[in-house]
Image (cartoon, rainbow, N blue to C red; front, side, top):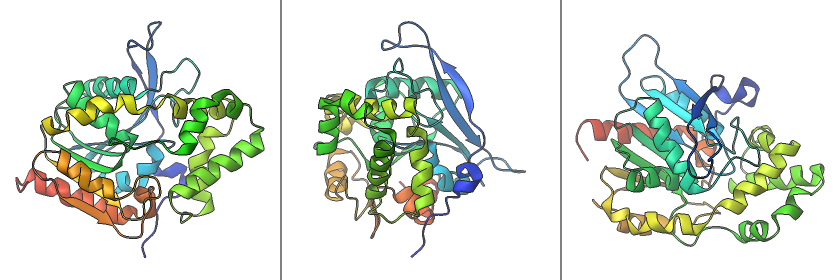
Length: 303
């Protein structure tokens, strides 16, 4: 079966990040926050449209790198590392709750001067994208929602354990922490990713700042921040397609049908047989084809 084309040796295949300063919100009254951003554009041709890719936890824009490269051949593709993740600042003063992240996405789209982009979102990136659309007034051309965190129940026993004992986890010796992070990431893909890919995804979390940030972002994620989104799912104003990995060990594929029932327009569900939660890397070719098919259908008015 096809696997990942993710190349750790090439820096995950993304250009160097550009740090964008966003104004501070309610969670950052003392100033703004920097956001690591990435833009890919087709060479020698007019872009077919604008696509924004949103990552989840504990990932970064790297999780989308192979799909972004493929889409970037004919679209402008915009990615970001949410503050608290990847190449964005991860200090203790950086708010990482979902409400703040959705407001940052709304602000970032304004910074990029994007008018109704297509948005593709994975994991908690789905809650961020839906929250920006449904609660912050962001208009989008379409939404492709892939194994997203929105419907209850979400949050594993490990999430709850970290929330109750965050300082203890933050003080675990570095080698033990590194082993835990790598196993956590590998388990999301049912241990199907190469070790060097797992190591690349784990790397941002392994220094002292990253270790504290890893447990902090888990502890700050709460279903109370997705509940208002769930209540408004029926008010979605754009076409939606749902994608789900059939063997996702974190969020079972049964949630796809529940999400479909909650959204207007009876959106189609695309499944990826045998793949786990890291399907954008486990089978980037299949995900890329599904997203490209979706964009074509939206632009042609077939949905």
